[in-house]
Image (cartoon, rainbow, N blue to C red; front, side, top):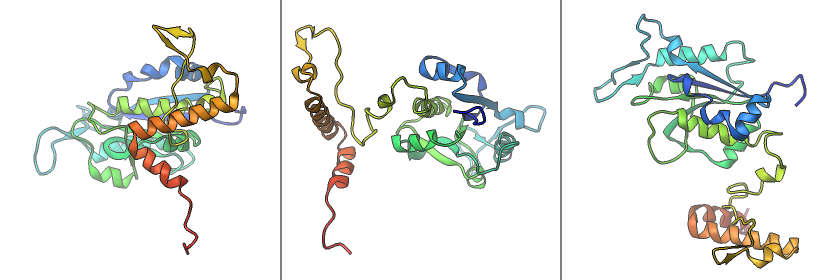
Length: 248
């Protein structure tokens, strides 16, 4: 990164800005943050409230339990975060939501290659649907379960992106030879000691034959994916299937 380039930047809109950087402030992400390889900004949604109570939510239209984040307050928070940027559509705007599209390694790679996202962390029963449409928020899910809020999910997404930024990991191969990078789960890993409680490292891995090691790892990755993630294996199988000569 040259001096004229801006670092990858994550802007978090949350009711609890003190939750950040949290885990993002330690280990690889924390070291990269301290060295300026990326930047983090946690903004309080309540700062955009207009009444003296700093209200950000209201009861659901149509009735029901819980509260809903107001469209006007959240839209103002998003607009304030965009102030001074190159344009309203310059950065991806994400909403961490259990109803969003599942986060994938390919989407993470796309986000890591860009300027960095603005991430909205929902709370309560959710946010007003109108602000999702009006501010073109991309809903993203990290799994089929419900959290107390979007903050932990945002940390997951940011961590996944940061580790792919140039200079963050020690070896470039560390980011390419791992689960999901090629549509497969990662092969088993071993290290010293040679024997542990009667279990030894597979002989092929200490043979010094790099071609055979690569073939073993590929076969193990395929076997694990086939057994544990048949959904991923089905996609991989379709990609490997030769196109019909009668097509077109």
